Image (cartoon, rainbow, N blue to C red; front, top):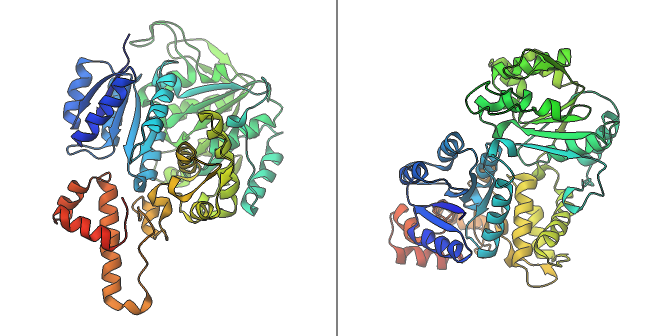
Length: 471
Protein backbone atom coordinates (compact mmCIF):
# COMPACT_ATOMS: atom_id res chain seq x y z
CA UNK A 1 0.00 0.00 0.00
CA UNK A 2 1.36 3.45 -0.88
CA UNK A 3 2.09 5.91 1.93
CA UNK A 4 -0.02 9.04 1.43
CA UNK A 5 1.35 12.40 2.58
CA UNK A 6 -0.53 15.71 2.48
CA UNK A 7 1.50 18.94 2.28
CA UNK A 8 -0.39 22.10 3.31
CA UNK A 9 1.37 25.40 2.56
CA UNK A 10 0.33 28.56 0.73
CA UNK A 11 3.79 28.78 -0.89
CA UNK A 12 3.21 26.92 -4.17
CA UNK A 13 6.94 26.69 -4.90
CA UNK A 14 7.58 25.03 -1.55
CA UNK A 15 4.71 22.59 -2.13
CA UNK A 16 6.17 21.67 -5.50
CA UNK A 17 9.66 21.11 -4.08
CA UNK A 18 8.39 19.00 -1.18
CA UNK A 19 6.19 16.96 -3.54
CA UNK A 20 9.18 16.22 -5.79
CA UNK A 21 11.43 15.32 -2.86
CA UNK A 22 8.91 13.02 -1.19
CA UNK A 23 7.74 11.42 -4.44
CA UNK A 24 11.35 10.67 -5.33
CA UNK A 25 11.64 8.83 -2.01
CA UNK A 26 8.64 6.60 -2.71
CA UNK A 27 5.75 8.51 -1.11
CA UNK A 28 2.43 9.49 -2.70
CA UNK A 29 2.03 13.24 -2.21
CA UNK A 30 -0.97 15.56 -2.37
CA UNK A 31 -0.62 19.33 -1.90
CA UNK A 32 -3.05 22.01 -0.75
CA UNK A 33 -2.53 25.78 -0.49
CA UNK A 34 -5.42 26.46 1.89
CA UNK A 35 -7.00 24.80 4.88
CA UNK A 36 -10.35 24.39 3.13
CA UNK A 37 -8.71 22.55 0.22
CA UNK A 38 -6.82 20.34 2.67
CA UNK A 39 -10.03 19.40 4.50
CA UNK A 40 -11.64 18.48 1.17
CA UNK A 41 -8.69 16.22 0.34
CA UNK A 42 -8.92 14.51 3.73
CA UNK A 43 -12.60 13.67 3.23
CA UNK A 44 -11.84 11.68 0.08
CA UNK A 45 -8.50 10.07 1.00
CA UNK A 46 -6.69 8.79 4.10
CA UNK A 47 -3.27 10.30 4.78
CA UNK A 48 -0.68 8.68 7.04
CA UNK A 49 1.11 12.01 7.47
CA UNK A 50 0.30 15.72 7.11
CA UNK A 51 2.98 18.42 6.77
CA UNK A 52 1.19 21.64 7.72
CA UNK A 53 2.49 25.21 7.63
CA UNK A 54 1.87 27.11 10.84
CA UNK A 55 0.20 30.02 9.04
CA UNK A 56 -2.32 29.63 6.22
CA UNK A 57 -4.46 32.24 4.44
CA UNK A 58 -7.77 30.91 5.80
CA UNK A 59 -6.76 29.13 9.01
CA UNK A 60 -3.77 28.13 11.12
CA UNK A 61 -2.02 25.00 12.38
CA UNK A 62 -3.92 24.70 15.72
CA UNK A 63 -7.28 24.60 13.92
CA UNK A 64 -5.99 22.15 11.30
CA UNK A 65 -4.51 19.92 14.03
CA UNK A 66 -7.83 19.91 15.89
CA UNK A 67 -9.65 18.94 12.67
CA UNK A 68 -7.18 16.15 11.86
CA UNK A 69 -7.33 14.68 15.36
CA UNK A 70 -11.14 14.69 15.27
CA UNK A 71 -11.54 13.19 11.79
CA UNK A 72 -8.42 11.02 11.38
CA UNK A 73 -6.79 10.17 14.74
CA UNK A 74 -4.33 7.77 13.10
CA UNK A 75 -2.74 10.54 11.01
CA UNK A 76 0.59 11.99 12.18
CA UNK A 77 1.15 15.76 11.86
CA UNK A 78 4.41 17.68 11.46
CA UNK A 79 4.21 21.48 11.79
CA UNK A 80 6.30 23.62 9.43
CA UNK A 81 7.27 26.85 11.18
CA UNK A 82 9.75 29.68 11.39
CA UNK A 83 12.17 29.42 14.30
CA UNK A 84 10.66 32.51 15.94
CA UNK A 85 7.49 30.43 16.49
CA UNK A 86 9.17 27.52 18.25
CA UNK A 87 7.24 27.92 21.50
CA UNK A 88 3.93 27.78 19.63
CA UNK A 89 5.06 24.73 17.67
CA UNK A 90 6.10 22.93 20.84
CA UNK A 91 2.67 23.68 22.33
CA UNK A 92 1.10 22.01 19.29
CA UNK A 93 3.18 18.91 20.04
CA UNK A 94 1.55 18.84 23.46
CA UNK A 95 -1.81 18.85 21.66
CA UNK A 96 -1.02 15.89 19.43
CA UNK A 97 1.38 17.00 16.68
CA UNK A 98 4.25 14.57 16.19
CA UNK A 99 6.99 17.16 15.68
CA UNK A 100 7.85 20.51 14.15
CA UNK A 101 10.47 21.48 11.61
CA UNK A 102 11.82 24.99 11.13
CA UNK A 103 12.32 26.88 7.88
CA UNK A 104 14.47 26.89 5.84
CA UNK A 105 13.88 23.19 5.21
CA UNK A 106 16.79 20.83 4.59
CA UNK A 107 16.00 17.65 2.58
CA UNK A 108 17.90 15.23 4.84
CA UNK A 109 16.35 16.66 8.00
CA UNK A 110 12.86 16.66 6.50
CA UNK A 111 13.13 13.03 5.35
CA UNK A 112 14.40 12.01 8.79
CA UNK A 113 11.40 13.61 10.50
CA UNK A 114 9.00 12.06 7.97
CA UNK A 115 10.47 8.59 8.52
CA UNK A 116 10.26 9.00 12.30
CA UNK A 117 6.62 10.10 12.14
CA UNK A 118 5.61 7.26 9.84
CA UNK A 119 7.45 4.73 12.00
CA UNK A 120 5.41 5.84 15.00
CA UNK A 121 2.23 5.93 12.97
CA UNK A 122 2.56 2.31 11.89
CA UNK A 123 2.67 1.15 15.51
CA UNK A 124 -0.86 2.34 16.32
CA UNK A 125 -3.39 5.12 16.19
CA UNK A 126 -2.67 8.60 17.50
CA UNK A 127 -4.68 7.74 20.61
CA UNK A 128 -2.70 4.54 21.18
CA UNK A 129 0.55 6.38 20.59
CA UNK A 130 -0.39 8.84 23.34
CA UNK A 131 0.24 5.95 25.74
CA UNK A 132 3.77 4.61 26.02
CA UNK A 133 4.75 1.60 28.12
CA UNK A 134 8.30 1.03 29.27
CA UNK A 135 9.80 -1.38 31.77
CA UNK A 136 12.89 -0.36 33.68
CA UNK A 137 15.48 -3.02 34.14
CA UNK A 138 15.11 -4.52 30.67
CA UNK A 139 18.57 -4.28 29.23
CA UNK A 140 20.89 -1.32 29.48
CA UNK A 141 19.56 2.14 28.65
CA UNK A 142 21.07 3.68 25.57
CA UNK A 143 22.02 7.28 25.02
CA UNK A 144 18.53 8.15 23.90
CA UNK A 145 17.00 7.16 27.26
CA UNK A 146 19.77 8.28 29.61
CA UNK A 147 18.90 10.94 32.18
CA UNK A 148 21.38 13.81 32.35
CA UNK A 149 21.98 15.70 35.58
CA UNK A 150 22.71 19.40 35.18
CA UNK A 151 25.51 21.06 37.09
CA UNK A 152 23.86 24.26 38.35
CA UNK A 153 22.22 24.78 41.76
CA UNK A 154 18.68 24.29 40.37
CA UNK A 155 19.66 20.95 38.81
CA UNK A 156 21.39 19.83 42.00
CA UNK A 157 18.22 20.60 43.97
CA UNK A 158 16.13 18.56 41.51
CA UNK A 159 18.52 15.61 41.86
CA UNK A 160 18.28 15.87 45.66
CA UNK A 161 14.47 15.90 45.56
CA UNK A 162 14.37 12.92 43.20
CA UNK A 163 16.65 10.94 45.51
CA UNK A 164 14.40 11.75 48.48
CA UNK A 165 10.99 11.05 46.94
CA UNK A 166 11.78 8.17 44.56
CA UNK A 167 11.97 5.38 47.20
CA UNK A 168 8.57 6.39 48.62
CA UNK A 169 5.12 5.77 47.16
CA UNK A 170 4.13 9.45 47.26
CA UNK A 171 2.32 11.00 44.32
CA UNK A 172 4.52 13.63 42.66
CA UNK A 173 3.43 16.63 40.58
CA UNK A 174 6.15 17.82 38.21
CA UNK A 175 5.65 21.38 36.99
CA UNK A 176 7.44 23.54 34.44
CA UNK A 177 7.20 25.01 30.97
CA UNK A 178 6.71 22.81 27.94
CA UNK A 179 9.92 21.06 26.92
CA UNK A 180 11.72 21.30 30.28
CA UNK A 181 12.04 17.51 30.63
CA UNK A 182 9.17 16.59 32.94
CA UNK A 183 8.81 13.06 31.55
CA UNK A 184 12.55 12.41 31.95
CA UNK A 185 12.27 13.36 35.62
CA UNK A 186 9.26 11.04 36.00
CA UNK A 187 11.24 8.15 34.47
CA UNK A 188 14.15 8.89 36.78
CA UNK A 189 11.83 8.74 39.81
CA UNK A 190 10.45 5.41 38.58
CA UNK A 191 13.91 3.99 37.89
CA UNK A 192 15.06 4.80 41.44
CA UNK A 193 11.87 3.50 43.09
CA UNK A 194 10.92 0.08 44.48
CA UNK A 195 8.74 -0.33 41.37
CA UNK A 196 11.65 -0.02 38.93
CA UNK A 197 11.20 -3.52 37.47
CA UNK A 198 7.46 -3.01 36.91
CA UNK A 199 5.89 -1.11 33.97
CA UNK A 200 6.19 2.64 33.53
CA UNK A 201 3.13 3.79 31.57
CA UNK A 202 3.09 7.31 30.17
CA UNK A 203 -0.19 8.93 29.10
CA UNK A 204 -0.12 12.27 27.30
CA UNK A 205 -3.45 13.74 28.39
CA UNK A 206 -2.89 16.70 26.06
CA UNK A 207 -2.74 14.45 22.98
CA UNK A 208 -5.84 12.41 23.84
CA UNK A 209 -9.18 13.33 22.30
CA UNK A 210 -11.33 14.29 25.29
CA UNK A 211 -14.07 11.81 24.39
CA UNK A 212 -11.57 8.90 24.39
CA UNK A 213 -9.57 9.81 27.50
CA UNK A 214 -11.80 7.70 29.78
CA UNK A 215 -11.32 4.62 27.62
CA UNK A 216 -7.58 5.23 27.45
CA UNK A 217 -7.24 5.48 31.24
CA UNK A 218 -9.74 2.88 32.41
CA UNK A 219 -10.30 0.61 29.40
CA UNK A 220 -13.61 -0.54 27.96
CA UNK A 221 -15.65 -3.62 27.21
CA UNK A 222 -16.74 -4.80 23.80
CA UNK A 223 -19.75 -2.80 22.59
CA UNK A 224 -19.42 -0.11 25.26
CA UNK A 225 -19.52 2.54 22.53
CA UNK A 226 -19.26 2.84 18.77
CA UNK A 227 -15.89 1.47 17.69
CA UNK A 228 -15.36 -0.68 20.80
CA UNK A 229 -14.99 -3.94 18.85
CA UNK A 230 -13.21 -5.80 21.66
CA UNK A 231 -12.33 -5.58 25.34
CA UNK A 232 -9.40 -3.28 26.03
CA UNK A 233 -7.26 -2.78 29.12
CA UNK A 234 -6.69 0.84 30.07
CA UNK A 235 -3.53 2.52 31.29
CA UNK A 236 -4.26 1.76 34.95
CA UNK A 237 -4.38 -1.97 34.25
CA UNK A 238 -1.26 -1.80 32.13
CA UNK A 239 0.61 0.01 34.92
CA UNK A 240 -0.54 -2.33 37.72
CA UNK A 241 2.33 -2.77 40.16
CA UNK A 242 4.29 0.04 38.53
CA UNK A 243 4.02 3.75 37.77
CA UNK A 244 1.45 5.72 35.76
CA UNK A 245 2.67 9.07 34.44
CA UNK A 246 -0.08 11.53 33.54
CA UNK A 247 1.46 14.22 31.37
CA UNK A 248 -0.51 17.49 31.02
CA UNK A 249 -2.97 16.23 33.64
CA UNK A 250 -4.78 19.59 33.58
CA UNK A 251 -6.27 18.66 30.19
CA UNK A 252 -8.49 15.93 31.67
CA UNK A 253 -12.22 16.63 31.53
CA UNK A 254 -14.06 17.23 34.78
CA UNK A 255 -15.82 13.86 34.44
CA UNK A 256 -12.52 12.01 34.07
CA UNK A 257 -11.08 13.97 36.99
CA UNK A 258 -13.86 12.53 39.17
CA UNK A 259 -13.08 8.99 37.95
CA UNK A 260 -9.37 9.51 38.53
CA UNK A 261 -10.01 10.76 42.07
CA UNK A 262 -12.06 7.64 42.85
CA UNK A 263 -9.26 5.37 41.63
CA UNK A 264 -6.70 7.18 43.78
CA UNK A 265 -8.96 6.99 46.84
CA UNK A 266 -10.22 3.41 46.49
CA UNK A 267 -7.54 1.77 44.32
CA UNK A 268 -10.24 0.29 42.13
CA UNK A 269 -12.20 1.26 39.01
CA UNK A 270 -14.55 -0.07 36.33
CA UNK A 271 -13.87 -0.35 32.65
CA UNK A 272 -16.29 1.68 30.53
CA UNK A 273 -19.33 -0.52 29.97
CA UNK A 274 -18.39 -2.98 32.74
CA UNK A 275 -20.07 -3.71 36.07
CA UNK A 276 -17.17 -5.39 37.89
CA UNK A 277 -14.51 -3.44 39.81
CA UNK A 278 -10.82 -4.01 39.06
CA UNK A 279 -8.30 -3.49 41.86
CA UNK A 280 -4.92 -1.91 41.01
CA UNK A 281 -1.71 -0.91 42.75
CA UNK A 282 -0.33 2.06 40.86
CA UNK A 283 1.89 5.00 41.79
CA UNK A 284 0.84 8.27 40.20
CA UNK A 285 3.29 10.80 38.78
CA UNK A 286 1.71 13.80 37.05
CA UNK A 287 3.01 16.78 35.10
CA UNK A 288 1.62 20.09 33.94
CA UNK A 289 2.82 23.32 32.35
CA UNK A 290 -0.07 25.37 33.74
CA UNK A 291 -0.95 26.71 37.18
CA UNK A 292 -3.37 24.12 38.57
CA UNK A 293 -4.15 26.33 41.57
CA UNK A 294 -5.45 28.93 39.13
CA UNK A 295 -7.39 26.18 37.31
CA UNK A 296 -8.94 25.21 40.66
CA UNK A 297 -9.95 28.84 41.31
CA UNK A 298 -11.53 28.99 37.84
CA UNK A 299 -13.43 25.73 38.39
CA UNK A 300 -11.55 23.79 35.70
CA UNK A 301 -9.73 21.41 38.06
CA UNK A 302 -10.88 19.67 41.22
CA UNK A 303 -9.15 20.86 44.38
CA UNK A 304 -9.40 17.44 46.07
CA UNK A 305 -7.74 15.81 43.05
CA UNK A 306 -4.94 18.38 43.12
CA UNK A 307 -4.21 17.51 46.75
CA UNK A 308 -4.10 13.79 45.81
CA UNK A 309 -1.58 14.17 42.99
CA UNK A 310 0.48 16.87 44.71
CA UNK A 311 1.82 15.06 47.78
CA UNK A 312 5.23 16.25 46.61
CA UNK A 313 6.11 18.85 43.94
CA UNK A 314 9.17 19.19 41.75
CA UNK A 315 9.43 22.39 39.71
CA UNK A 316 11.68 22.53 36.63
CA UNK A 317 13.06 25.94 35.71
CA UNK A 318 13.13 26.98 32.04
CA UNK A 319 16.45 26.57 30.27
CA UNK A 320 17.01 30.33 30.08
CA UNK A 321 17.16 30.40 33.89
CA UNK A 322 19.81 27.69 34.16
CA UNK A 323 22.24 28.63 31.41
CA UNK A 324 25.09 26.91 33.24
CA UNK A 325 23.51 23.58 32.16
CA UNK A 326 23.12 24.38 28.45
CA UNK A 327 26.61 23.21 27.39
CA UNK A 328 26.18 19.84 29.13
CA UNK A 329 22.71 19.25 27.71
CA UNK A 330 23.89 20.31 24.24
CA UNK A 331 26.75 17.81 24.36
CA UNK A 332 24.27 15.09 25.36
CA UNK A 333 22.10 15.96 22.35
CA UNK A 334 25.18 15.73 20.13
CA UNK A 335 25.62 12.13 21.32
CA UNK A 336 21.97 11.38 20.56
CA UNK A 337 22.20 12.92 17.08
CA UNK A 338 25.43 11.04 16.32
CA UNK A 339 23.67 7.80 17.23
CA UNK A 340 20.60 8.66 15.15
CA UNK A 341 22.41 10.04 12.09
CA UNK A 342 25.54 7.89 12.07
CA UNK A 343 27.84 10.89 12.57
CA UNK A 344 30.92 11.42 14.75
CA UNK A 345 30.68 15.10 15.74
CA UNK A 346 32.77 15.80 18.86
CA UNK A 347 31.25 19.04 20.12
CA UNK A 348 31.20 22.79 19.48
CA UNK A 349 33.63 25.56 18.67
CA UNK A 350 33.72 28.55 21.03
CA UNK A 351 31.56 30.82 18.87
CA UNK A 352 28.72 28.31 18.43
CA UNK A 353 28.73 27.41 22.12
CA UNK A 354 28.50 31.10 23.00
CA UNK A 355 25.46 31.43 20.72
CA UNK A 356 23.80 28.44 22.37
CA UNK A 357 24.30 29.70 25.90
CA UNK A 358 23.05 33.19 24.98
CA UNK A 359 19.79 32.10 23.32
CA UNK A 360 16.45 32.35 25.17
CA UNK A 361 15.26 28.77 24.34
CA UNK A 362 11.54 29.42 24.52
CA UNK A 363 11.02 25.75 23.60
CA UNK A 364 13.48 24.66 26.32
CA UNK A 365 15.15 21.23 26.01
CA UNK A 366 12.95 20.15 23.13
CA UNK A 367 14.01 23.17 21.07
CA UNK A 368 17.66 22.67 22.04
CA UNK A 369 17.50 19.03 20.99
CA UNK A 370 16.02 19.91 17.60
CA UNK A 371 18.61 22.64 16.98
CA UNK A 372 21.50 20.31 17.88
CA UNK A 373 20.15 17.50 15.70
CA UNK A 374 19.98 19.89 12.75
CA UNK A 375 23.47 21.23 13.51
CA UNK A 376 24.95 17.72 13.60
CA UNK A 377 23.24 16.99 10.28
CA UNK A 378 24.75 20.13 8.69
CA UNK A 379 28.20 19.83 10.26
CA UNK A 380 31.03 18.87 7.91
CA UNK A 381 33.81 18.79 10.49
CA UNK A 382 34.50 17.36 13.93
CA UNK A 383 32.99 20.40 15.65
CA UNK A 384 29.75 22.31 15.16
CA UNK A 385 30.36 25.85 13.94
CA UNK A 386 28.08 28.90 13.95
CA UNK A 387 26.98 28.44 10.36
CA UNK A 388 25.30 25.15 11.36
CA UNK A 389 22.92 26.97 13.73
CA UNK A 390 19.59 28.56 12.73
CA UNK A 391 19.54 32.32 12.33
CA UNK A 392 17.42 32.98 15.41
CA UNK A 393 20.11 31.38 17.59
CA UNK A 394 22.78 33.52 15.91
CA UNK A 395 21.10 36.80 16.86
CA UNK A 396 23.45 38.95 18.93
CA UNK A 397 20.78 39.70 21.50
CA UNK A 398 17.49 38.06 22.34
CA UNK A 399 14.89 40.74 23.05
CA UNK A 400 12.13 40.19 25.58
CA UNK A 401 9.67 39.62 22.75
CA UNK A 402 11.47 36.37 21.90
CA UNK A 403 9.87 34.87 24.99
CA UNK A 404 6.60 35.18 23.09
CA UNK A 405 7.94 33.50 20.00
CA UNK A 406 8.56 36.69 18.03
CA UNK A 407 12.21 37.51 18.63
CA UNK A 408 14.97 38.56 16.23
CA UNK A 409 15.62 35.95 13.62
CA UNK A 410 18.59 36.11 11.32
CA UNK A 411 22.31 36.86 11.25
CA UNK A 412 24.47 38.92 13.55
CA UNK A 413 26.27 40.92 10.89
CA UNK A 414 24.51 44.20 11.54
CA UNK A 415 25.84 46.23 14.45
CA UNK A 416 23.48 47.20 17.23
CA UNK A 417 22.82 50.96 17.41
CA UNK A 418 25.23 52.88 19.61
CA UNK A 419 24.00 55.10 22.38
CA UNK A 420 25.15 58.19 20.49
CA UNK A 421 23.22 57.29 17.34
CA UNK A 422 20.21 59.05 18.80
CA UNK A 423 16.75 58.76 17.29
CA UNK A 424 18.10 57.71 13.88
CA UNK A 425 19.81 54.65 15.42
CA UNK A 426 16.67 53.66 17.30
CA UNK A 427 14.61 53.97 14.11
CA UNK A 428 17.09 51.84 12.15
CA UNK A 429 17.07 49.16 14.84
CA UNK A 430 13.26 49.13 14.90
CA UNK A 431 13.15 48.82 11.10
CA UNK A 432 15.70 45.99 11.17
CA UNK A 433 13.67 44.10 13.78
CA UNK A 434 10.46 44.62 11.77
CA UNK A 435 12.10 43.16 8.65
CA UNK A 436 13.47 40.18 10.58
CA UNK A 437 10.12 39.39 12.16
CA UNK A 438 8.28 39.76 8.82
CA UNK A 439 10.74 37.38 7.16
CA UNK A 440 10.19 34.83 9.94
CA UNK A 441 6.41 35.13 9.71
CA UNK A 442 6.55 34.49 5.97
CA UNK A 443 8.97 31.58 6.12
CA UNK A 444 11.86 33.53 4.51
CA UNK A 445 9.74 34.21 1.39
CA UNK A 446 10.99 37.63 0.25
CA UNK A 447 8.11 38.38 -2.13
CA UNK A 448 5.50 37.84 0.56
CA UNK A 449 7.61 39.76 3.08
CA UNK A 450 7.95 42.76 0.76
CA UNK A 451 4.20 42.70 0.09
CA UNK A 452 3.42 42.56 3.80
CA UNK A 453 5.80 45.45 4.54
CA UNK A 454 4.24 47.43 1.68
CA UNK A 455 7.57 47.85 -0.16
CA UNK A 456 8.82 46.45 -3.44
CA UNK A 457 11.18 43.48 -3.61
CA UNK A 458 14.16 45.60 -4.71
CA UNK A 459 13.77 47.90 -1.69
CA UNK A 460 13.70 44.86 0.59
CA UNK A 461 16.94 43.55 -0.96
CA UNK A 462 18.59 46.93 -0.49
CA UNK A 463 17.56 47.06 3.17
CA UNK A 464 18.79 43.52 3.80
CA UNK A 465 22.12 44.50 2.29
CA UNK A 466 22.36 47.75 4.23
CA UNK A 467 21.70 45.98 7.55
CA UNK A 468 24.12 43.18 6.72
CA UNK A 469 21.44 40.53 6.91
CA UNK A 470 22.02 37.25 5.09
CA UNK A 471 18.89 35.16 4.53
